[in-house]
Length: 413
Image (tube, rainbow, N blue to C red):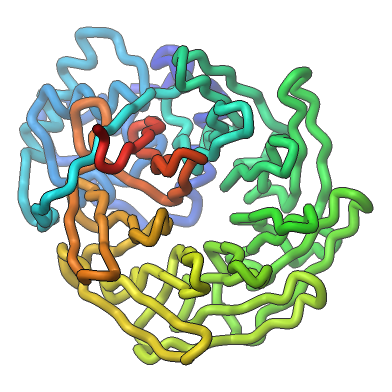
C-alpha cells in the first residue's frame, strides 16, 4: 500500500514534518502479523516507529480509534480495520501504569482539540485579551483560541520553522521560536505577517524556549546548541553565550523575582543563573550526578523548583542557603516529570513516563502529593511538555500526542 497524505487528511507539510522527525532512526522491527498490518505500516509509520507504538499502554479498539482519530482522518472502513488490528497486537497493558495519589483537592479540566490533525500542539500561553496562543510543532503553525467561544485560528509559518514554543511580549504579540531553522519570529495576529530574525551564529541552530524580562528583552535557550540567547526587539540585536558545561542542553527558562533568569539543564545535573544585563552565567551543580532537568519555575520567595526528570523526583533549590531538597514523585523513578509551574505557592507538574499522564499537585507546606489523570479525547495518551498559568491562576496545559489544549481550574467552586 502506498502512503497518500491527502487520502488520509494529512497536509503535505505535516507529512514532511513527520518524516523529518524519523530521519536517522535505527532499523525498526516489523509490525506484528495480522489483518491490518499493511494499513498500520502505511498510516502509523509515517510519524511513529513501531517501537514507539509498542511502548504505549495499549488500548481496546474504541480507544485506539479515538487516539489515531486525533492524528489522521481515515475512511470509516479503514478506521475500523486499523483499530481492530492495533487492539489485537497492542492490547491494554499496565506496564507503565501511573500511581495516582488521592487527596482532598479537586480540579476541573476544560479541553479543546485544535483543527489541524497531527500537529503536536503545545505550549499554550494566555494573552492580555484572554485568548490562548499555542504552536503546532509538527504542523509548522501557530494558533490562537478564544476559550469563551471555542473559536480558533491557525497561522502557517515559514517553511522549516517547526516552532518549539510561543511566548508573548508585554503588548501580547506572539513570538515564535524556530527550532529547525534557527530563527525568532514575530507574528502579527491581524494580518498573519511574520518578521523573521535569524540567529547570528550558524552554530546556534535550535531556539527552544523563551521568556521576556521586565526590560522587554527575550531570553531563550538553544538546547542542542548549548547556548542561551538574548534578543532586544527594540534594536534587533541578538547576543549568544555558550554554557560552560559541555552538552548541558539548556531547556526550560524562567525569571526570578530579582530579575535573574534560571535555566534547566536537560543534559546533566545542573541549573544556571543568567544575569539578563551582562549574560554572566553561574552554574549550580545538582548533588545527584544522574540528574537531568527538563523544566523549572521560581516561587515568589526566590526558591527554584525543578523536575528531576532523570531520577523521577521533584526538586527544590534555595539560592540564599544554596541547599537542595528532593522528593520522590508518586509514580517512581521512571515517572519522568516534565512540565512544571508554581501557582500561589503550590507546585504543579506532570509525570510523562507513565500512563495516564498525571497532573501532580505538591504542597510545600505539608509536603504532600495529589494527582489526577489528564483527559484527552477519551484516552490517556499524553504528553504534557510545558505548563504555564493564566492571570486567574488556572493551569494552561496540553496533550501533544492528541492535539489538545486544556485549562485546569484548581479547587473549583
